[in-house]
Each structure stands twice: as C-alpha cells, then as structure tokens.
Length: 237
Image (tube, rainbow, N blue to C red; front, side, top):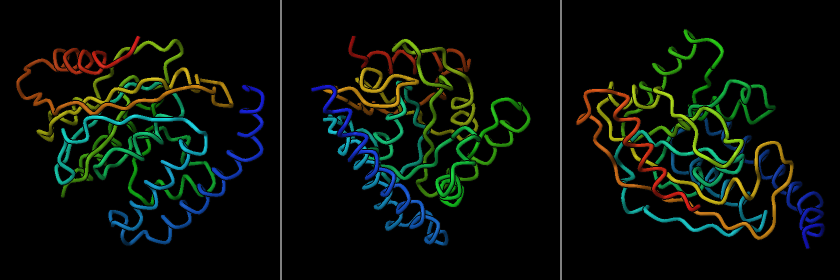
C-alpha cells in the first residue's frame, strides 16, 4: 500500500498541487490591490486545504472558537513538517501574515505572490535585516491582521519541540497583542524533514489554544516558557 500511495503522490497528487499552486500564485499577484480582501484569502485557503486533501491526509482541527477573526494576534506554533504551513493557512480562521525565510522569495511565482500578499521575508543570517523584518511585521498588524511565527525557527529533526526564540514575543509585547499557541500533531510522522513524499496512514491534528495576555510577564523568557508549555501540552506522544 505504501508503494501505491507514493506512486499516487508523484503521478497525481504532486502534479495537481503544482498546478493549484501556480493558479493561486497568479491569482494572488493579480489581486495585489486587494491583498487583504476576501477573494484572495478564499483562494489561498482553498489551495492550502487542497494540498492536505490531495495527499489523502485526514486532519482534525479544534479550538477555532478560541479566537476572534477580527482581532489581531501573534500565533506561535511548533514546527513539525513542510505540511504545517498548509494546515495553518487552510484552517486558521484569521487573516494573517507569515514571517518566512528569505529563500522562499526566490521560488518562481510563489515568492512574488508571498511578497504581494504582504508576507515578510527574514534573513536569519543577518541580525540587522531580521530586526528590520520584525518592524515590517508590526506595520502589518492592524485592522485584525495577525501574524504566524514558528518560534523554533526551523522544522524539528526529531519530532520534539525545540527551543523557542524571542522574536514572536518581542512583537507581541511591543504591540500589546495576545499570543495564541497552536499545537500541530502528526505532521512529523506524515512528512519528516528531508523526506520528499508523505507517509500513509498519518492522522493530522491542529489545535488553536486560548489567547495569552503576556503583559502579565515582566521577563520575556518567562513568557516564552509559559507559551511553550501551552503548545507542548497539546502534543500527542
């Protein structure tokens, strides 16, 4: 069955994903005057959900009632797999901007579409440029626009949650915004880092936690520890 599933991915699933990605990228670029509008957002959500569904991966989403789509938040999530992006993009009810690595900017069509949509590219090798990116994110967080950040900075190599970095929490403190923990499960098993295909019989889940007012913390490290604990509480061992 695994061989048949892999053949399906390469012969049917991945080609359809490439086509839908190109369509979504072009549509997003065309709609650049309305980057936060309902039409581009609806197409982007449909595309993201299609990726998960074309890979025949069942997903369970909980906690959507914990957030207000009209409120700005800083969402932080554990980073298990390449597939995390599609799950968050497809099922998070809030309009948001990603903080993404600069290499994505070079991907044909996709990089341009991400820039047009207002997502922020980060040069992690350049602290000064990374700081400027953080300032750009702050300018986007108005009128109910949120941001989603993977505070580990990269995908897990073991399935365990890595050390959190301070960037997301600095933004939340400076903007006085709630932090919302997101817990992703099953994504590492489905497609671990470096593997070019998904594994069969993988069940995915995404849980959106309750907003955390981090103004209660005087030390940013205490806030990081608290939020990380909330993310980890939802991890299925």
